[in-house]
Length: 209
Image 1 (cartoon, rainbow, N blue to C red):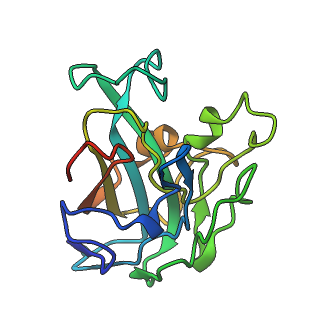
Image 2: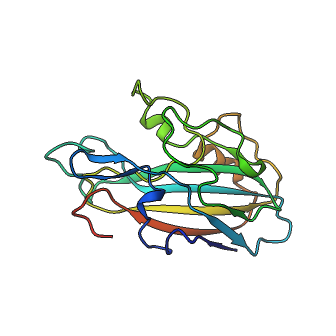
């Protein structure tokens, strides 16, 4: 399989319009345009009955002690964990592309509605759901795509891995509200093929991409 985007080069920098947060000289970070990138895939294996798309960041700090704290930095040596930015399942096998901004345009406080998604698929909740759970202004169920917003004091750039999966079932067995981990578990034993493209992003002006 092959997955492409015109939004950024594979392993290249993600432009700011596809991010949740952008650099702000005064406040470190401000909300950005939060557009989903366009995606197109081809060469799906015979027997494909649906597609799933997951975007995750494998570089999220495993501890939050230093995250976004003045006078501190998040060390490169800190163990990292996955953070899911987009979970989309049950796309019909006839769908082989997603347009730029079709699933997200702007930041929606308390999260976008779901699980119904454009193109006939289902959106899971991304990990901003947990991140904002204690914020009275932002808490909610964040369905669909919400882009990069890594710690502004992290010493490493973050990677954003977009993966399309070709599946041998038309629908995954998950609950009405499901997470990236739920989708990964449900896909086990049903993946016929997959392809990925990766972008890089930072909110730390001192970190080069």
